[in-house]
Length: 351
Image 1 (cartoon, rainbow, N blue to C red):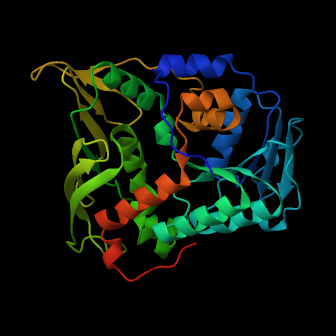
Image 2: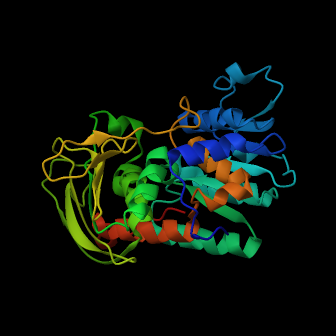
Image 3: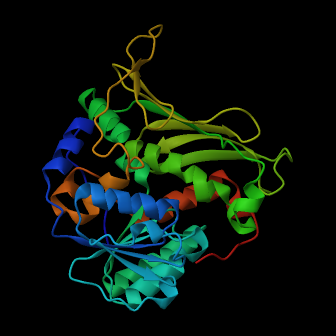
């Protein structure tokens, strides 16, 4: 199982250069699930130069554009019908819908795969992730969770800069969701009822990788009745201290007009990620925010995807690009359950 280790801090240019210098041609990978996420993973593997790719999907029509590509083997019928066995060192990227992630992990492990990148959030509750962690540890499986925002070029740029300035002194972040009226048609009720875990943890994964997981905190949630499918509330505020001793606060009002953002402070500067893909810096209280340039390895791929896949494939890159372990994913999910009031709601079994 992957563990969270200290990393050598490179900025976005350093990360892009390190990936460009690495040779991925000898590696192989299987992508399970070919929705939007799976398509981005295939693009990432191609950008890296991986020459042996398998794609497993239930929809033969969806993978029709891939037919005839000599580097890609297509496996249709879904992961339930898979009989393929792992080649030495092969990476499996599991990008099924959330409700099927744990089931898919078990199936791939039964087939002999031992090197897994599992899409977030793995399961909708921390208990499910902890049970899976124990099972994979017994099987000797190396697994990481695809919280791609900890592989963003913006993440590496800001991490390197704040380290040079002596570290973060305080932090605040927001995770207001831009809710669409058709979400009840797009997502199952159990996922919407825990939308904070299914989606808002993206922000928390990024910020709490930068400042450390929460250690002590007070969480408060309010239900104003504006969002029927999320019964535990729609306004969330709180504050605490991270495991690194950094004070933080957060805010979200799902019925208003906010968005995701992170603001970090050092003794020399303030940094703003809004949107999370971009970094802005301010060096004086009345100064304007200055947008900082970022170097990106594969601009046509969803941010963080190529970077996290590169770290999964190439051992030397793991010293620079953090992989989110299952144990930390469980701890982050446990925090989310308290932020959103899920720990006080009736238990929902998932995974």
